[in-house]
Image 1 (tube, rainbow, N blue to C red):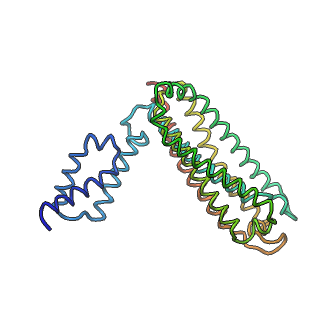
Image 2 (cartoon, one colour):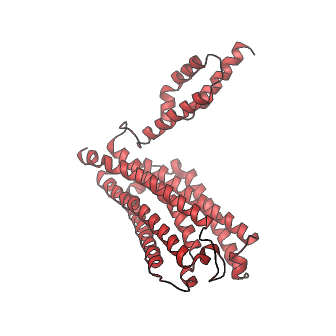
Image 3 (cartoon, rainbow, N blue to C red):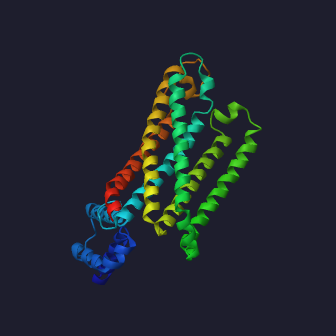
Length: 319
């Protein structure tokens, strides 16, 4: 291999690793970074450890540029980033809550003996807090709506057009699959819909994936739009308070779902296993376990956003 060829390979490698850094950082330091990488490698291929080091530094720069770590951006941007982190966490949590609602459908009809008090209280608590979070999200949209209108009037639509189009398309696909499932379900028995794995269950899984993609697409569109809005301090404070409310509710709902599972495992394990009432069944439900793990992950991310918002609150008030 020629020296020029090796230089081209190193240059290609450095540009590939540069992609881990945010665009603004690349435009300012990209050339220097590429030269530094070439000097460090000296014609050698980068080791895995070297690549991971670059990835780690790049992700840190992305977090810093997004206002999630450090103090390189204004307090307003830090609060905005924390609130958007909570929004992303709630999007994942919302998917988990919808899955939980499907898993726990008709749970109260499966209990033959024992007290319904614990599962009822935990289930109702989760449902109530989910409504609180939904109302908080609607309130946040109302608070930011005037800024959104100003953004559109200033010609901002072309900046978010593609993301919104993807969100609309994914939503249309999800609705179409839901309609197909609804019509199909009318011709099936309970056993055919809920027991075993057939074509109906396969299409249902496709529907669930499409629903998750639609939620992710709308969340991405919301984040991209909110980052571009010119938000006043009072509106930002209101949005931050609503974000804190949602971030606090998510761990509580996760605990409520766990308590519901534990209580149902004691008094009606057959419901969790999908077996006939009164039968001896294992309380371990894989789908419910995965759902609770997603809830916990979303709750942790939400708390990270909450800490960012609360940690910058005093600086925002004094700025």
